[in-house]
Length: 229
Image (cartoon, rainbow, N blue to C red; front, side, top):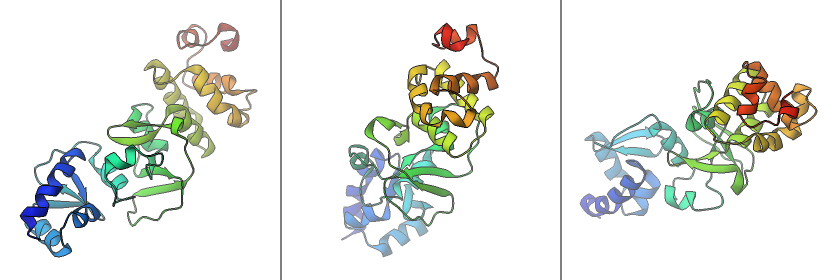
């Protein structure tokens, strides 16, 4: 198939995927590997990750590389197909989730995802954890599936992230109304013993105390005064 013909099939897909297309998607639409190589050589496509390309002229933003990393985990399906399914094959988590939600002050030098089944990746910057996530434990941000704030905080506690960083995440999430005290308390209840707390509510109080919030500040964030005392 001439490249112009399959290119017409690929460009609408790339436009719907923030300028990105996978090799598998292009091949499925009639491209050959030789044609892909030539388009990279001539600057029509730019290889961003193993098997993922950016169309020349497509705008990039701070999430482009994260999207490319995610697409590489299930390159045969489109982003729309994955987001519409019960299992999007890779959900941004941990520090990557915090960045997508815009909470906390943790930097991230890798792309972190949880997957329902064990996967392998050739990208050394991608870190995968085999952990399931229910439909109520993830949402969509910047075109990517991402663990909710309560699930993200729970994951970070389980993996030993220090309390100061977690406190900033919880504070920002409550201030920005991305979650509620009750939702956080439910998520933290199973791991509250990490902070020697009696329940999830006291674990949230402890984390906020680490970033200097107490008393009237806690009440403003939705705490019952009796719990916040």
